Length: 152
Image 1 (cartoon, helix red, strand yellow):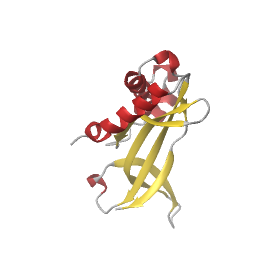
Image 2 (cartoon, helix red, strand yellow; image 1 turned 90 degrees about the horizontal axis):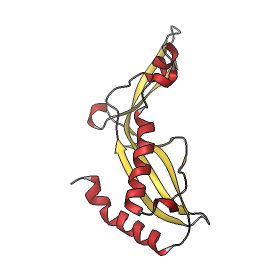
Image 3 (cartoon, helix red, strand yellow; image 1 turned 135 degrees about the vertical axis):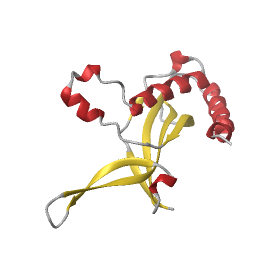
Image 4 (cartoon, helix red, strand yellow; image 1 turned 180 degrees about the vertical axis):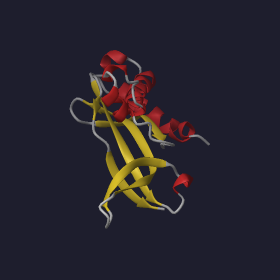
């Protein structure tokens, strides 16, 4: 079973609410990080590599956080009434590409769009396809990633 199968009914209900309301809507996008404590980080995936401070010898320690990320697009009327999710995407990272380091070496406009930036565009496209009437959708509003910690 795929996430699309699970969410199909939810997206249909979002479309029905969208069709019932009039006027413009906002598509509010955000990426959420779900962090899990697991002995085997490869069993769920990676979210980021973080600085853990210095050890007794003064060397910097890093550790990898395991979990998954979710990028969602919430449809909201301009009056603030939430209609529900219009698009959602779950993923984990396999490796860290280092595009931030690449930007220091070459012209930043030549660095490819990072995966997270592509997800913003993909969710906007999927939201408009699901809802229809793109002229009613305001430019999406995006927020910085937040974190939710879970123990699995």
